[in-house]
Image (cartoon, rainbow, N blue to C red; front, side):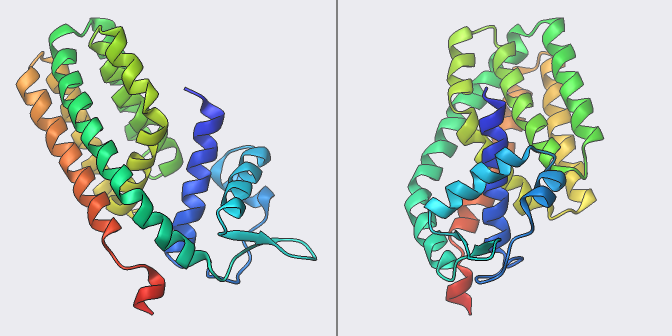
Length: 236
């Protein structure tokens, strides 16, 4: 997976969230690139790339005198993009359900001790990262990719890796909707992954599949429900 691309997409989506939730309103100035790089623990070039992408989409603009601002039409542009992406989101959720429920069943049947050790390490890192969403999101994706690896099916692993960038979007957005920095919710989400690990460790494919199916159903409900909400400009 291209880690640089992944970081750039995380920052792009985080800036979109900040705009959509009104933390930075149309006409207001974003914090400096240097501050954002420190906040998100990425390079300044990654932040610049994310900003350039959002400028191209009509969400941000650079004004004379310096600084990056949220454009007045940003909310309308996001609402139009949301409608356009809803069908794509539904399709991605369907693909994830087909691939990941089957993957975890095979992983429970065919996993090696090395696979269990790798998954255990990722789950431990997820627990340590509770409260740090940027890092937690990366571990979350790595957990799902490690399950595909544990199937011992290289083709299935390649298929999962091919959608990993898009998968990061659903993981990032669903985690944000669930958590909102509430530690109790973060612990519940961690426990879901720990339970999937235990089902794989015990080689119980039915339990593993049921847990993954429930997990992905929650992801779908959170994301599709959010996509049906009116945009901030429609509420005001």
